[in-house]
Amino acid sequence: MTSPRLPAGPITLAGKRVSRLGLGTMRLTGPGTWGPPRDPATAIRVLREAVHIQGITHLDTADAYGPHTVEELICRALRPYPDRLLIATKVGMVRPGPDLWRPLGRPEYLRAAVEASLRRLASARLDLCYLHRIDPAVPLEDQVGELRQLQVEGKIGHIGLSKVSVGQIRSASTEIHVAAVQNACNQAEPDDPAMDYCRVQDIPYVAYRPLNAGALISAGRAGDMLSWLLDQGDHVAPIPGASSPRHLRDLIAAVRLLEPARPR
Ligand SMILES: NC(=O)c1ccc[n+]([C@@H]2O[C@H](COP(=O)([O-])OP(=O)(O)OC[C@H]3O[C@@H](n4cnc5c(N)ncnc54)[C@H](OP(=O)(O)O)[C@@H]3O)[C@@H](O)[C@H]2O)c1
Image (tube, rainbow, N blue to C red; front, side, top):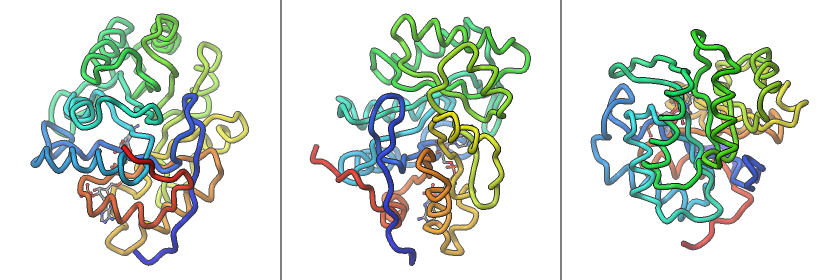
């Protein structure tokens, strides 16, 4: 990693001041985002090191990672959770098999999924819950309406949207307060109109796949890619994924978190 350390954050996300660099946890599974990781102890080390040593206070996960595996790992690794930690999860996607993903946004399914995530994470409330995908087979207002009802019941703190267009953010905003938008963005996929829309609307924009799924890292560009994203605006929070402590440290080496790492 040759880039100088980039100053980053913090950012306010779902009511918490968290590190602008979050950790994506999708890779802490078996191949195809399916089943347990080859070495669960290493996955747990990555999570603990990120939060307790490196000062990362934003973890991004989903019930679909494994499925269920990563939420369970997060609970094993980090409970009792530090107050400063934001765990963002997602519901609304089912997994027929490795590398297979299917949106499912029926309200009764979303409710059951939120309740199952609460149990796996052993939490009373999901800090930030994204609708993983808008299900085209279900009216949008029914999907976000169910999440809003879960928010009223105290089971969800804040609601986010994932992989959405500006039009979809606008439509959902008539039903809910959109607390965050999570879309793919990196130097190879740079043109997302939602990023600018979120800046204008003061909505945090969480950039997933910020390293282009690792494709350009062999060319030594992780620091450049993160730098480019951080330069897009203070509302942009990248969530790179790393499944080894070495990769985690490489990423942290590129970014100087402005909130100091705190002791356990
Ligand atoms: N909302 C959505 O629909 C959605 C979709 C995709 C992803 N996401 C979120 O975004 C997060 C990040 O996305 P992503 O994991 O697909 O892609 P990414 O962050 O762009 O890239 C992750 C890849 O980069 C590799 N890597 C990281 N640091 C490295 C280093 N220093 N040297 C070499 N390789 C390195 C990782 O390898 P190792 O794993 O071997 O460390 C991994 O294969 C996910 O974890 C997930 O939380 C959300």
